[in-house]
Image (cartoon, rainbow, N blue to C red; front, side, top):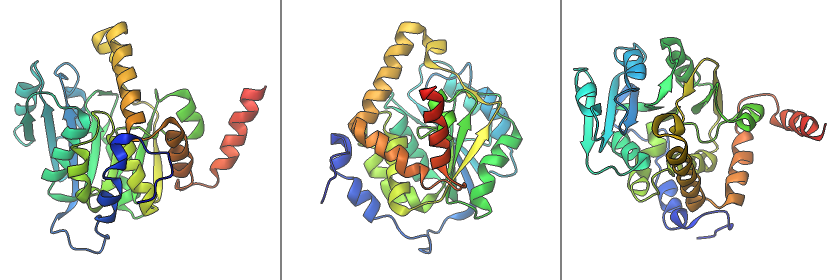
Length: 273
């Protein structure tokens, strides 16, 4: 295998296998037509109802799967109070990427909607807007851009680590085993590499009133800062810092819009002034 030096140690051992084994879209997967919605939760009992009340029973979704990633609070009891949710539970806590892999493996529909459990302000219309570009065939992948995504992401028009995505299941089917060996927070970066390899058209969906609840709001300033640092460290285990920058630029080229270069020029002009 040839490596360009942009991959971290966690990615080098299996990314090529996972991507080369990905079946083309015309391979019959035996899945139902529609969307499986996957939410991964760890100690989100105080927040997860915000998203569950919106997605449970939503007409665009064929099923809702919640993966309880070793929660020690009342998350399990809360999600089981929704009788139509498919609940997958494991202990101990193993991180979001592993939890995502379990949801993907269990999904019964041919498209996946991945949502974070700590969202605020989501409406049924937001779910429709995230699904629409992919289900209408305008893009292979859609990714949300939340109102509180980092400033630089909002200026460029892409939050490359957004947890809200719609993806054809065939793109990730062969990546499940690889994802189970990734760092706890390496899933989005790994998926991005698959999108790039497959040349997927990406639609960015602006969620102007939606935000995710930051870690410092959940566990306090110091523990929150430590958790954010661990997320960054995991991303650099999948891709080097140079690799993360390169991945962003390559994904920008896949976005379905007039020209990302003009946006970049505007940003640099603002910074220079």
